[in-house]
Length: 376
Image (cartoon, rainbow, N blue to C red; front, side, top):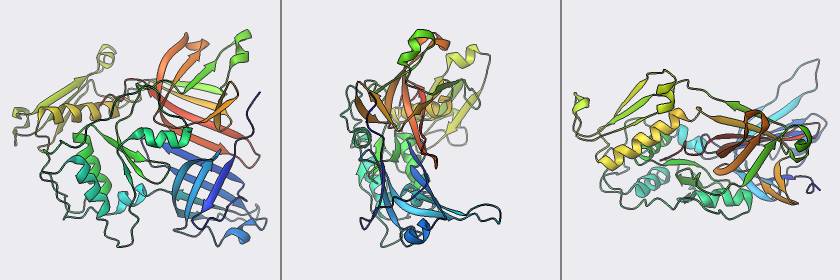
């Protein structure tokens, strides 16, 4: 028996519920910013709610009671025509949107600071005096547990952020907070993404954890165990390197003579006949450990489309044995499909898109990459 219908609740910062929308999309991801978009018809609902959905209004979006997105209205759109009814669309985006446009302050000091201190300094010195100061979570499990409501089982231990103090690369003129922070995180093999609570997660993807979901797409009599609408597998080497090299400190103009170097290669891409060498030159990479972490992060990002699945499911949550678990990124899943030889093993969930249409249909689209892709 399926669990009760999935619920979506949108609440303004003053506690007022926003519940007269006609369609919604909710995006949670580790590779792009979280956001939620809504559409309201012209049947009088907008007149009742327009005082809430103004630019800058803060909203919290929950699915089945668990927080998925916390952010502010950044886009208002009202397409009009004489032939069709009008609608109003608005988009709620997270504070990551501010980091992409807000310049990093030149007073941010990086010498003899840990990467934790650099990230905090860059975020907390935004030029606006009243700019929101998000919490920074240096543990990804805090984020995914908010969405799923479950403790992580298995998984890698936390990366130690405190002793990494080799960086001496200051803010470049005009560099945004996002660019500045990402530049330093890449050197340490780290990533950052949105927490559903409005905080910022700094960590590495964890595909060592136990699978939260099992997706089945079977034929014949076994089809009664299916729990997906469809599975789309893609193998894409566009832009993927066969070899990647990082040249760090000590090379100068002749970067190939750098004292600090590291590299990665893909046997699979080489065996397929592709020869693509990528060279990254960064004098700010000053130790062999940092060079290896930089190479791992850059390589993982470029080969992540080599083996992917997009899984489409009916409903906004995963149901197993009568229990319900919300779909969340930075989790893992097992995929079983007849057309690809049965069980293909564990995959890492990068992104989840939830849709509820005006007709009331609920669909979840889960994007995954092969476990081991994000090895940082």
